Length: 160
Image (tube, rainbow, N blue to C red; front, side, top):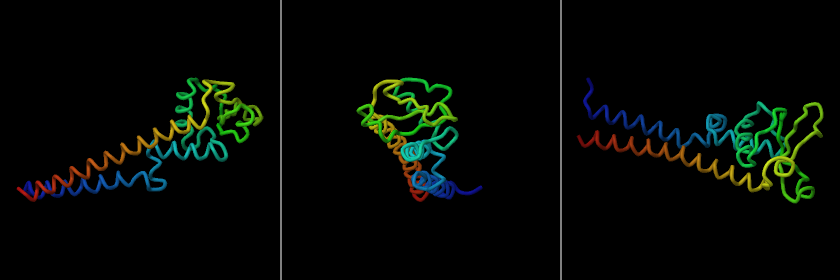
């Protein structure tokens, strides 16, 4: 059996490697999609550019967040969401459009005007962005905790 000092040092080094990997995970393309924050960030980006379709990365997470913010359940027929380009002039605030008919893309409902609470999309986006930042800070904090624990184990292993 290996001496306790060796086990503590090797175990601490292992925790350091795992902790460093967790700290870096939010910045690694494609690998970061295991994280809720990365899927939501990609979903926001897609929704604001070309629209976000059901089944695409981040759709279910964005749907859940929008349902919470606007205090409603999406109709079953919703198949895509997109931030409207001309909603400022039409409703006085930015809105998210729900596409409800795959055969007719003109068949849309505006969140905050036709459905749900009257919340400007910019406020909804800021709320989602704060959750992303908080979640990502929690992931990095957990990685730092593992890293610090690993260093402490190595120090204890060398002092024994």
